[in-house]
Amino acid sequence: MAAMRQVTPFRVEVQSKIDLFASVLETLEKWLKVMSYWMSLVSVFMGGDIAKDMPVESKIFKTTDSQWRKIMERAAEQKNLIACCQNDLLVNSLPKLQEDLEICQKRLEGYLETKRGLFPRFYFCSNADLLKILSMGSDPHQVQDDFEKLFDAINRVTFDKTDRRKIMSIHQEFGGSHEDVDLEDPVKCGLEIEQWLCQLEAEMQKSMRAICQAGATECFSQPLLAFIAKYQS
Picture 1: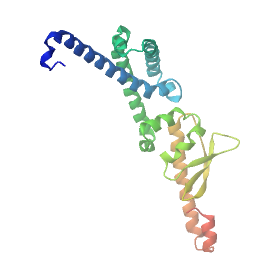
Picture 2 (picture 1 turned 135 degrees about the vertical axis):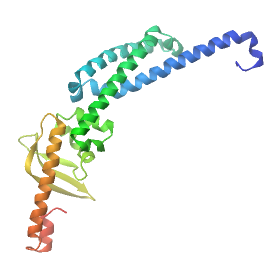
Picture 3 (picture 1 turned 30 degrees about the horizontal axis):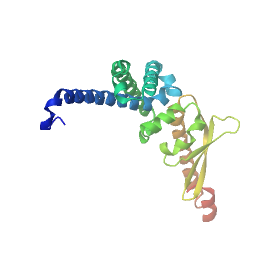
Picture 4 (picture 1 turned 180 degrees about the vertical axis):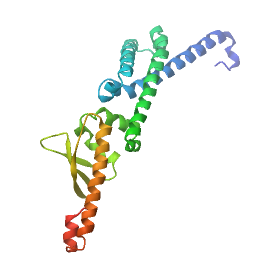
């Protein structure tokens, strides 16, 4: 409309609308950005092991979360986009909310990088998968479905029936078949997930090395089928 010749009598009103829509768009883009940050961080900082490891960031996020919920409650009551985007609470709060959430996001990325440095197999995981694993690391049974993301040949592990935090063997499935490898020394799952995963990795390698050595010793001392039945592929 602003580009039409006939706009002259309405130019002031049209320009006013252009400025209004530009302001609404700017606010809406900030709003969506904050929402994106909030959605990716709420499950991390509102519970789980990561929140305990990052108390300062968790406190920042909880303050931000409280303000965010007030904004959304007002928006739910108002329901009109233009009126919402002209609300002083929303307009004045969004920049601060975005700044605090970006701080939490940046420090969370640093935290993940630290964990990857302690257990490099975490580099095989996406950020989303790694966050899920770390947030449940204090309960090793919750990590069962994620072992195959960390190890090429471990789908699941078997825990001791008495001590439910002790891993006794590793399990792999392939091509409709499955194999179990008993660990030479059981791995005790502590509170820090990267520590007991490092122990599991070392014990897996040690156990497989022992199996290979035993197989090399016995491969010519028994029938082929018996040897195949006794040892893993």
